[in-house]
Image (spheres, rainbow, N blue to C red):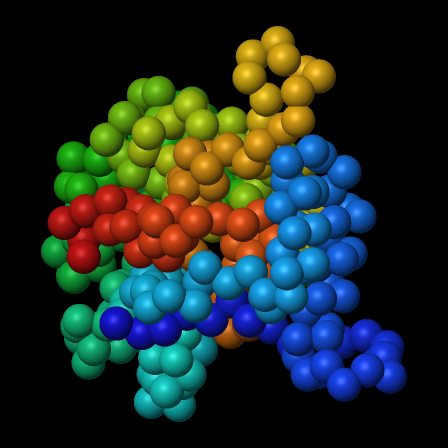
Length: 316
């Protein structure tokens, strides 16, 4: 197994004290978190950690395997160039997409490491393309930028064939980069559409990308209500949000008990998966997320590995 470290170097003004620099900055961060979380038990736990001088909250320091559910092809030599880094991050498999021909070639060179996903154009391709992709050796689908909402019935035959062939899908949700001449309707990419798809095709396993970007509440509801839907937290939007925002997003109270201190819903966090998208620094964000919300090791294992196993199914 490969190690996952949720330790990160936190930069701030130095104090004139003979405390180890890494530990000092960690304590500063924990003190800040205690201010960001004025929520009863959660705030108290962070304060006790800082007071006890225990260093970073790092359940991810335990050895874990990682399946990267969301990676892009960047060149035929990428594996050789980045294998040492990826091994250090714990990657045991990488689901890769975008350049279909090149991704398939790379997967044939590294059949136990690269899981090839076919980038399918929902408006120009259909069920036959899904079947052809399966026959070529692709193990899943990447969907992005449709002209209609993902839940439009025009796309149902494609989803039906993917379900029948046990082809999971990685589906871009939320904001997509705008380029001149690229006519993409952002409103077609809402996470709530995955709920509709899941209700019609309950065995069609989907990972939504980027936690829905600007629609995170829809993404959370999709995970909470659909057994066959998971979400990654890659991308450039949510990784700019503070720990207090994630605490708010994942914290819950018992029904009608709005006056009670909220607690992190570990079942909800346990529906996340790991995805790096383009950069290789996403593990740092995931580690900080796990530490800030004090996610136990058994839930982290689901996020980093077990959920991806369920999502991929026979595609592994």
